[in-house]
Length: 136
Figure (cartoon, rainbow, N blue to C red):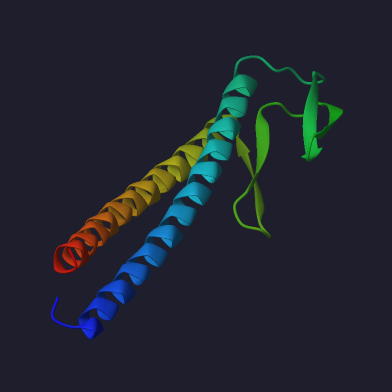
């Protein structure tokens, strides 16, 4: 590297890419957690299909580590929160289809984020090598 200014520019680029990578990594962790919740929900609905009857007793989480006992009123229907303000009623097969679509969307987002992280890692490696070669 020819000057201290170029060195500073490389360091700024490195910091920028590092911040970008950290942001994408945080998003990746959020999407992974959400995907885990969706997969648990899907398994629960699949279990409902396998033989829960009206009047069966179940545990319902109400926050944290707390659950309450409840009886199933309509085991063939579930209520899906499609947005924060909208809840729709679906049969079990319709809800599984909805969840499968969400899983597919999450997997696409994960793939995109992983690709972005890999590209940033390449840039970070190149900058690091350039700086090391110039100041060795």
